[in-house]
Image 1 (spheres, rainbow, N blue to C red):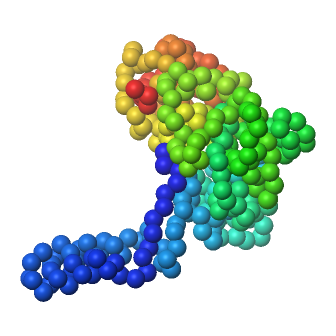
Image 2: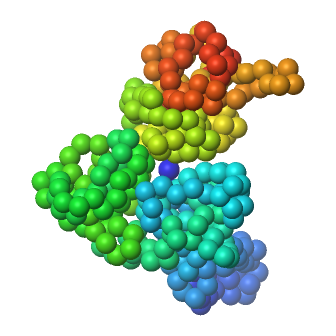
Length: 333
């Protein structure tokens, strides 16, 4: 997972390439090679003009369309209406790219690649909490929920951050870190339930299958919520997505995407950390993959089932309300 990506556009022709091109044309040899190199220097549509450096954070370009989420977790809807389908959630301090705005709503693209509508009051175009300042560390929340206080380990609650939330620190005191928050505020995280990324623009280290399974187990008992991403409400692909993300593996957020990730393995080879996919018979009598879980010991798995209603433990060879395991994928070697 590459978090930061910088590229530059050179407004003036590269002098070296121009000289090579001119010389090759004069000499009549290798002209096409030099010409192609010059074209490649200026023909990349991902570059921005004006001599600007383009910074990407979690795939979101930090430009005039960038914003950060100010709420602990905010819903993103299919339409600018809370009665429409929730398509995903975004966590505090995550960047989004604003496509358009109207009547108190903003259409955004999220770090997971999903596009939808969010209430404009839950985002801010002040992105200084993630960009443009001097950061010493990046802090990632790994517990179900972590309180950010106004002072080291105490004081007023600034925000309740959910698993997967990322902040940028500029100060520290023993095991406490002072971080920038949206809205030009600061707060402190202390103790367990967080990891420190140093340098701050580095990727989250890849852990192992056992740690991945242990992370997934932290959601046990959490209520099911379609397209939810937090312990207050989560669905099966969301549980897998967040658990993998903080263990250094960037999986798709959709069930279909996860079904095509990693290496396919037979059920008899399932071990800790493998993804287990459940099939259920629909109203039309046809079976289809409807759920995914994380194997916790090779014979059972944790999943957030729609019909079960919460994140529960299922047995590999026994049917539960959300179906029975039919296939598996390995994402940790």
